[in-house]
Amino acid sequence: MDWQIEALVELVRAAYPGWDGFAFDAFISREKEPLHKQQIRFTERLGEAAFRERLEEKAYAEIIDHIERLGNAAAELHTANASSGDLNILEPASHEAAAFAHLFYNLQYGSADLTKRINYFVYEAQQRGWPVKWAFLSYFLWLAQPDSHVLVKPRMTQWILQFLGERHHFTQSPTGESYAAICTTMQKLLGGLVIYGASDMLDLQAFVATAYRMSRQQTGGLNRRAQIDLDMPPTVYEPLDTTSEVAALREQPATYETTAPQHSLEQISAKTHLPLTQLVNWKHAIERKGQAILYGPPGTGKTFLAQHLARHLVGGGDGFWELVQFHPAYAYEDFIQGLRPVEQNGALAYEVVAGRFLEFCARAQGRDTCVLVIDEINRADLARVFGELMYLLEYREERVALATGGMFSIPSNVLLIGTMNTADRSVALVDNALRRRFAFLPLQPNYAILRHFHQGLNVESLISTLQQINAQLDPTQQLGVSFFLTEALPQEIELIWRTEIEPYLEEQFFDRPNAMAPFRWQTVAARLQLQ
Image (tube, rainbow, N blue to C red):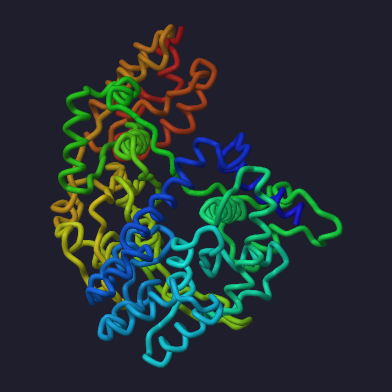
């Protein structure tokens, strides 16, 4: 599998430029360390000695509680929907806690062959009507014995198996034989990665998950079959460069950062020219409410500031931030959850799929502060998009039943920052229910940014012109300075004015043509002395 390993390494390097092995610092901190922390927590709570002690004490409910807590804290498991998530076995199993605890102990630490232990657990669970999912079954086996056992996440596992030419090992329902075959294949892959410093299945999981994530980003998140077709060379006899094969089909993924470097408010103040005291107050407002909206007219740097505040809030921890942009067609099904067509055994079926926010919250479980930036938040029908989230935004500690089943609550470490262009919809028109749930942080045109950006260039005539324009506009419609933040401003000012400023002003002054006349390029050009 030499060419497959080379292709996977290239995908990992797309995420971590310069990656030269498993000792790569950024890879350790972002990918390996979270997995090792999970393994340590598991050993402390459900290692063989601790588990046996709890069985002897008949602390069956405590065992189930530990399993649930560990599972909910794992980014590798889908737990947002209790009824269909990876931990959905626990609710029915809790009614037979003693039987479940003994069966689970035998699965983890029994003396019989692993294949027999898995088949026995699956059989007993089916007899009792307990649902058994691959991720649940394998997650704790993987943590208990990371030297030999693997985590099976169905979509990712099918992707890597087919990529390695071993797709036939995977079965839709868990079996001991399938798991043993998957472990054997993954051991071979691990052996091929020893030259890069791989030591166990925790390392392998970090490596495969990174490659899978980058593969989905590079191919625009296609379905699994198309994904694999694009990632695999057409024949194993003529290996091709997989990264160049998909280059023409790439889409830019949403802004997403797993790194959390320190990003101080002092740095943000220097870049935005906003007073440090104001930024401190805004940070406290975001943390106090849990969600805030930066609002103001176009060109005032709302998205820029939101991203920098997100970086600051996640800085120094293992949290992450992500950006999503709302639009008029954005819906509840996109943001919370809804039915999506999926392929099952060659046939079309529909299943409930978590939306962007539920996926975000699932990944945020067990981490430090995580921030979701919602750009252009007021361009969507918010009542329709948010649904039950409207209640949870006000009552953060509560849980609600989702429309398609299951309970959901917003993790306490999740913060939301929205941006709102007041030229699109005045903040006064925002639903009062939404206003109560968000802190609103205003941004106005900041001419100091223009002076700072163009040091050495006289922009006072431009600033004076902008002030004259803004004096005639409603505060929600004024012009910001970001239109003019370009290094080639003297060469591009005419194009910017004719194609961006004039069309905007024509809309604002549509019923006042005399007010528009002084701000036509032919008139403005003479007074803009950019030197």
